[in-house]
Length: 278
Length: 293
Image (cartoon, rainbow over all chains, first blue to last red; front, side, top):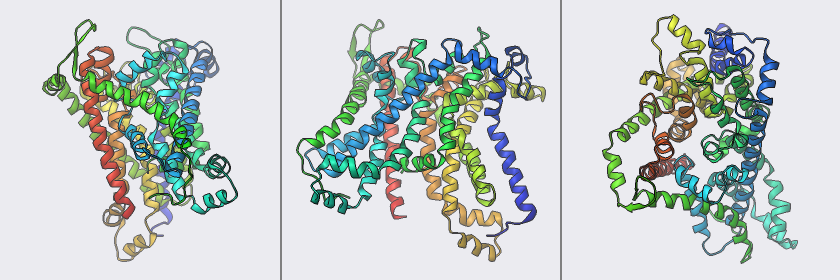
C-alpha cells in the first residue's frame, strides 16, 4: 500500500481521534449531565467532567422518574422491540416460504400487496392508521404498539432472496426422503436461515426500540409509554423547570440497550444493515 | 428468477401467507384507503359530518402558502442533512480506510451512534445548544456568536440539521467504508506509481469508483431526512419558531392531530405517498442496474 509511513500515519490517527471525540461529544455530555445536580445544569456553563450524583440520579430515574418510572418505560420499550422483531421475522419468513416454494393462484398478487407496504411508512399514513387502531380498541396496549409496525416488505424480500440461493437439490433430497413442506421448512430451511434471522433480529430490535411517533399516539397512559417517547415528556419546558439530570439519566438508559446490541453484535448488525438495504 | 422445484399443496401456501397479508390489509391498505377517501372529504367544523369535495383539499393545499413553504423547508432540510452527513461520513471513511492498526476500534466508535433514536438525538443536541442551559450555546454567546434557536428560524433550522446529520453519519460511514474497501488496491498503487498524489487519486479514481455507493446513500439519506426525522423535529423545535422547521411529515402530524384538519392532513398523506412511491421506484431501478454493474 502507498504512503503509509511515519508522520503521515500518526497525523491520520490524530485527526481520526479528534474527529471521533467531537463526534461522540453529544453522548458524553449527556452522560455528564446525568451525574450532576439540576442546579449545576440550569446555571450554565455546566461542568464538563462527571459529578458525584450518578447513583442518586439513576435511582430516582429508575424508581420514580418524572411522569412514569423509567424502569417501567424501559420494560415497555423492551416488550415493543422484541415483539416487533420476533413478529416481523415470524410472519415474513412464513410468507417468503410460501412465495418461493409454492405455485398457487394469486401468488404474484400477494407478492405485490406486500411490496406495496414499502411505499407507506407509518409517518405518512399516520392519522388513518391511528383511527384504525383506535377503532380496534388497541390504544394503550402492547398489541397496539406492536401489531401495526409488524408488516414489513424488507424482511420478506430478504428471506425471499436468501431462499432463492438455497440449492434445489435440498428440496429434491428432502422429498425423496419423504419430507413434506412443513418438515422441510422446520428441519432444513430454518436451520439454514439462522444467521439471516439473527442479523435481521438485531436491525429490527433497534428499529422497534427507537420508534417514536407511533408510541406517542397510541399510548396516553404514562405507564404504557416507551422510553424514547417518554423522554420527550420528561424534558423540562419553558414553564416547568423539570429535572435535567434525571432526564439525562433517562436518555443514557434509553440508548444503552440498542448501543449494546450494536457494539456486541457488530458483525450481525453490519450484515443485517447491508442486507436489508439490498 | 423462479424455483425449479416446488411443493404441491393447495391450502398450505395461503395459511403461510395469511398472517402477513392480514396485518398488511388491516394496517396498510385500510388506512391508505381511508387516507385516499378522506382526502376527498371536507368535514364540518364539529366533525359530525363530511362533504364530498373532490380535489378541493388538494387545490387548497397547492395554493396554501404554508404548505408550499413547508415544501421549501423540507427541501432545504433534506439537502443539508444529506450533504453534511455524507461529507462527514466520507471523510471518516477515507481516513479509517487508510489506517492499518486500530481500524476496527475506529469503526466501532463511529458506528455506535447509529443506535441512538432520532428523538433521543434531538434531546441530546438540545441539551448542548438550548439557549438557556446548553453549555455550547453558552460558549457561543461568550464568543459573540448570535444564537437563539427558540426565536430565530434559521438558527433552529441549523440545529435540527446538525442533529439529523449527526445521527446519520454512522450509517453512511459504514457503507462508504465497505465501498472503499472493495476498490482494488492495485488501481490505487498503479496511480501512485504514475505520480498521482493523494487528492488526485481520490478525485479521479476512488470517488468515481464509489459512485454506486454514493448514489445508493443519496436515496437512503433523502428518505431518512423526509420521513425518519420526525422525532428530531418534535423534540427540538416542534416545527417552530413559526413554521420554520415544519417539514412535510411534521405538517401531516400537526395538521391532523393538533389542528384536527383531517381532510388536509389526509391530502398531505396522499401527496407524501406519491413521493415515497417515486423514491422507491428510483431505488429499485438503481438496484437493478447495480446487478449489472
